[in-house]
Every structure is written in structure tokens, then in C-alpha cells.
Length: 637
Ligand code: WTA
Image (cartoon, rainbow, N blue to C red; front, side, top):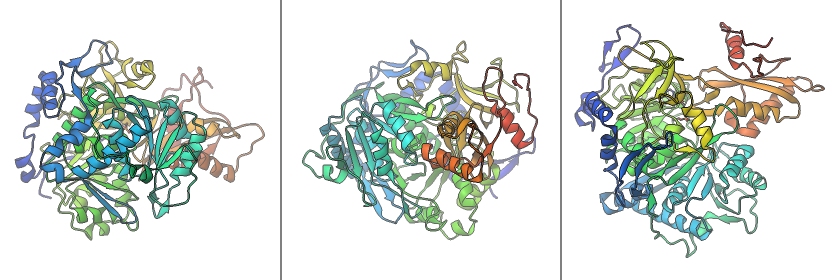
């Protein structure tokens, strides 16, 4: 292995150095220097990054921190993310460049140049306007991974409406809850999508959700699978019908917005209660996603960028849609399962389209690794230059496989740590950074992080602590939709005195300043890189007529990273059985979506609780793993 030249001081991990060809052409040649400058004067750094974008009117103030933690960025500035993701490319050679290559699971292909993307987005923007969609209104989008999904998102942004994308794998309950919270009047969906050769039932789930959602007046459905679906008079319209009407003109002015005008809400699981809708804004998010994407992945005009995440999650928002389009990249999008019809599907598409950068999750890597090297070995993957990882810590074994077998030992892996709340990558290498498998390396430009103990003191090298972010950044979520108090409470209260952001992760820092993320410290579970709350799983379980109480924990899983295990106390009169266990697993899947389906359901007589009645999940976890249960002094009995 030619780039592996150094053994770490403690001998634990090897350093991987980037190939010369990458260093020579990198945008950022010297991480340390750029970082130091950015930290010395973050506002100057962000102003410089912001100047790379198209503004209708320049900002007056880079950062307004007069109402902490409700920071405002680029105030006084006028912008629209579409002005940057589409409009400005139309005036350059990129007009005829491919903006998107999409492949459906059955093998159908759609390509759109920036010119063509602009036409589709403008047409749909006009359709939305004709349905009365106004600036500031939230349109809910519930779709498979088809081109109309980013088109719908971009169309909302263009007219100043917000979108709320609900992951297409979510169930009736989850969709209805999110429609209700967003007060959406308009839902955009599809008749279904292709997944592992089967059709998903999006429209029937949407129909059921709409039955419970009095706010919905209009539902626009893309015909993808052509399966029979129920359409309601006066409410339901076919996308293609509307797009062929004269109102769907391909010319539409992009709405001039304030930098702080909201772009979207995205629901994500938290520690307690219902998922929260994080709000991101046009100005700061445009600057942040494009800057991080350009720096971390060293984006060049000739790149073909593939972010394999679903647009229903933040990774898809920031790095499938917005960041890469602002940078004028060609984005790849694929509808279906990575192993359909065979486990070489991804590798064949990398070869076929000449993909240069692949950004995916450790769980996807582990899943494909299982099928063995022979599948990627059948393909020429030499177009790849860089690889990326996101969503959970990547285990060194998966890292090495990704590096060797997929990257041919030549592609540095950008392990990027960030969150729905941060809008974009926060801790990540740039291509010139020497890498240690399993570490997201060091903070990005303008980002100051620390790992602290319970007294907010920085911990020493190798010690575990809580990850905090010390200063604001442009991509940060502005608030929780409709609940600013919860925003303060969740992220800012613990370090109110210091003014730090609490990430909710534990981490270690080593003697080289490299950060090693350990995982969530709260009751958020990462299953296959997707974020779920124990509280949501538990409330799904107790919504079953036989269940009186429930607890959910995460235990390590070889492919998924973590899997959900549950403990259930039945109501008097109900009896435990294999059948009921299966029924409860299915019930959670029906309530939340298949990703939340518990691995196991254990029937128990009681649950370990604190005297104040809180379930001590760590005790359940310790018992299942057969490790020390720790301090039990607060245990009730
Ligand atoms: C975890 C996903 C280790 C972390 C973009 C974080 C990671 C949560 C990494 C946010 C990484 C994300 N290494 N852990 N490279 N990236 N995480 O909101 O626990 O879905 O707090 O955002 O994912 O999940 P979210």
C-alpha cells in the first residue's frame, strides 16, 4: 500500500497520506494555515466564502449575534438559493452541462442539463403558484428517489415557499404527524417507487395520512410505477397533467428573498417527544453547504458527484441537492436498492457514468462488503478520485475495504461528522489531510469544537467527553419550527454560560488533535445511519392495545451499526407469545416505517426506573451486553 507511511505513536492506527496527484491540484493546500486564518477572523472568512455566491444585494452584517442563540447571518443581504443552484449557471458554460444523471431501479435513465433542470423547476414552480402556494408556506414532499423530488424541492425554494421532505420509507403515522406540524396545504407525492424489484405504496400511505390531515387541500402525484391508485376528485392531481397545462410555463422569476428567509424544515428525532422540525435559511445555508462541499470534496468542474443518501434526510438536502448544484457539479441519483438485481449495481453505475466522487454511509459500505470483493472487482472503478462517509462512525474494517477495494488504495476517504442541526459538515478532513481510519479528523474552517467533561473543562488526549461547538457558523439551524424554547432548551441550555452548542455526541481527541466520534449520549439511536428516537419507538409500542409500557435501546449490529431492541410490559389480560412478538415488531414498522422495526421484543414484568419514573435505558443496555451496570443509586428498586 503506497500511501500508508506512518504508524501512530500509540501504534494503534496507521496514517494514510493523500496521493501526490490530489495534493497538487487541491483547492486547499494547507489545512493548518487556512484553519488558523479562519478562526482568527471567522466573519472575514465567511464573508469571503459568501462572495463566491450570487447576491441580489450584498449583506450589511456578516453575523448578528444580538439575540443568542438565534444567530442571524448576512443580514440585509438579498439572495435565493436557486439564484445560485440554477440561475447563475445558465449564464455560463454550465448551461449545457449535466446537472443530473438519474437511474431508476428498472434501468431507465433521465439526464437533465442545467438548462433543462431550470425548465422543469420553473414549470413546477408555476404549478405550485397556480395552486396558491405562497411565500413562507410549507409544502410537504413524500416521494421516492426520482428526479421530481429535487425538482419539487427546488421549485418551492424558487418561489420562497418552504419544503418539508418526509422520507419515502416513513409510514402513515409519521407522515400525518409531519404534515400536521407543518400545517401543509399541499402534498407532493408519487404513485410509488421501485425498491428491490417491488413497488412501494407511497400513494396509498399518503392517502391514509391525508385522511388524518385536515390541512391538506391539494395533492400532486407523480406517475412513476403506473400502479392503480386512488385519486380523490378536487384534491388529487397528476403531476404530468399539471405540467402540460399552459400555466406550467418554463419561465418563472426567482423570488428575491432576505438572507434569513427560511428555506426548509426537516424533521429529525430528538431525545423526547415528537420529532422536531429544524429550520434552515436561504443565505447561511447556501454559503455553508457550497463552501464545505467545495473544500472537503475539492470539487472540480469535471466532477461527477454521487451522494447516495436519500433526499429525505439532511445529507440528501445538503449534498445531493443544494451544495453540489450551487457548485455547478453533475449530480448522480439512483432510485433503488444497492444490491438489485445484483450486488454490483452501484459499482456498475460508477463505471457506466464515470463517477469521480462517492459519498455514502458506513452501513451501506458494510452491507455491500458482505457480498464480497468479486462484485466490485468486475468493474473499472478508476474514475473515482475521492470517497466520503457520513452518518455514523466508520469501523476500520469497512474503512479499509472502502479504501482498498473501491478506491483502489488511491482515493482518500473524507469521513464527515455533522448533523441535521448543523446544516453541513463540521468535522472532516480536506483531501490533503493525513487520515486515520475511523476518525473524522479535525474541524473544518471557521468551526471551533471542544470535547469537555461535566464541568465544561476540556478533557485530555484519549479521554471521553461531550462534543461542543464553541462559535456560530452560517449553516446552523435557526430554530425548531414553532418551538423556539425547545431549540434553546435542547442545544444551548447546558452550556448557556459559555454560549456553546451541545452536539449530543460523545467523542475523544487524540494527541494529534484528531477527533474520534463515539456516538450519541442521549436517547437517539442511529440505525443504518438513520436517526430515530427511543421515545418514538416506545410510543409506537404503547399505541398497541396489548402494551402498557415499553423501553427501546440500541445494541451493536454488524451491518446496521445499531439495531433497536425493545422491552415490553403487557397489559393485564394480554399474554406473551411468539405471535405477539412478531405482531409488535410489525406494529412499530407500520407506525414509523420499516427502518424502525425492532430486532427483538422482550416481554418483561418490570423496567428499571429512576425514583422519578424515568426508564434507565443504560441499565437495560448494560445487562444485554453483559457489562457493568454502573451507578445504580438512583434506581427505584
Ligand atoms: C452521527 C447526519 C460519526 C452523530 C449528517 C451525529 C457521525 C448524528 C458521523 C447526526 C461521522 C454523523 N462519524 N458519527 N462521520 N456523521 N454522525 O442528524 O451521532 O441524521 O450526532 O445527520 O449522526 O445525525 P443526522
